[in-house]
Amino acid sequence: MKCTKAHKLMSASLDGELSASEQELLAAHLKQCVACGKEYHAFQEMHRLLHHAQPFSAPPYLASRVMARLDTVETRPFFSPLWANFAEALMIFMVIGIGVASGNLISNSMGLHNFDDGLASMSLEIFDATPPESLGGAYLAMLEVSNEK
Image (tube, rainbow, N blue to C red):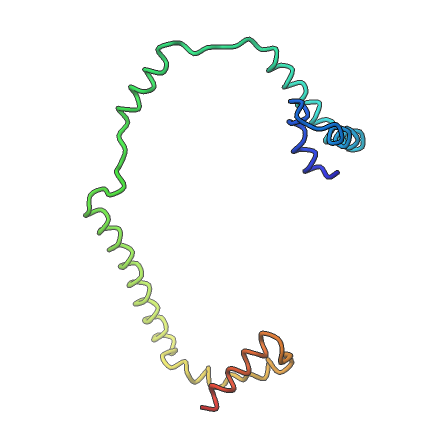
């Protein structure tokens, strides 16, 4: 049995929910695995402490106090003021626009205004070792067909 399976069975074992065969498998694993054995003993101790603990009931006024506080908590509705939603959308478009504009400025200042020349000089020879039945081979075949037209 693997440790992950043993971890899943430990709680059920303490609650008496395992079949005899599952209990035997768990016991055999706990004898072999020191880490799981320590964890199971810790679970046993916690189970024993909780089983012998005295029950505690909440004060009768607790529910009414909690409910009263829930009524006073202000929440922002999903469809809050319409102008706030428009402001968020406007900010997003402004950030995208500034990014595009600055990208164009940077590419123009670096002399990258005509990048098609660089693409034309690239060769597909690096893909020659690709088998025809592979995904790369299928891609190359599609490129050859589109270049012939």
